[in-house]
Length: 308
Image 1 (spheres, rainbow, N blue to C red):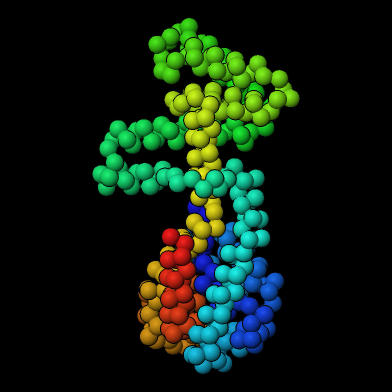
Image 2: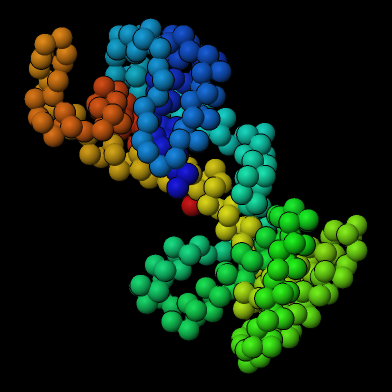
């Protein structure tokens, strides 16, 4: 899962905006901020701590709580400016399209996980679940027609046609109807190689039907768009932000800011073994301080509310 690992709120306080007065004191550049943003977005589901210059750490330690809190709030504002900017989002959307085939069509769709949760909670019937699952499979099959290279797509359809011909002879009563599947595959393959748009639409219909979905061109195209939307939702900035902000709030609530420390050799360690075993993210927030962390949590909750 591509989650927003620490979420911007975990790094902003110490590596935020050099263009704001409070953080100019820390001597950190905009390039460092953007680097941390990109690292957080690409880091996957694990928690990471920010890359912070030693000089910035020393400057932060010398601040009182009011200044630290202001650093956090200003830092979150800086992070939001970057992540929510039109240019940043357009670049991210293009990466999702190229790498995964996801496109934002503005459709309301349900993920497989959400569908399973609804079934477990008995919010939908088994019949509705099977119908929705079948449509998802058909949509995923149809979506391939818009993503695969046309040569490899044509080769795949030719293989599907041979399979459908065999099934039509050996198992003529098989569902979906192998004869209708053959007809749809032949119709797609009969289109001239230069007619890419029509070929992809016809391929989407044939693949959708082969997966048990609709043979109607408009419905098959909609099912493909729904799959593109599901892919987009999985990798979009908003999804990563929601995951990261939620995780941050959870981790922040587990930090024992009253935990005692003691010297051990050339290190300072926590007296409580559980705190000593805590993740780097927990320890980072401990060093950040209670008041700044609570301020970050308040900002994170407000941001999360906007994204829902």
